[in-house]
Image (cartoon, rainbow, N blue to C red; front, side, top):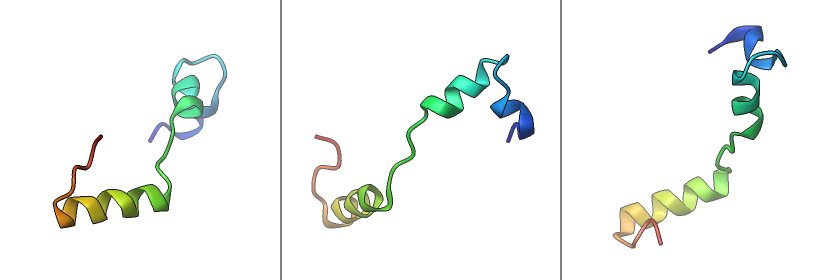
Length: 43
């Protein structure tokens, strides 16, 4: 999305990319399974 600028240390966006947490596949499967079966998704 930001090209090489996302990894440049003098821009603040580098910190956001570094600190972002991507959900794992297992977490997404749990989320989808709960949503489909009607269980509480958050909590």
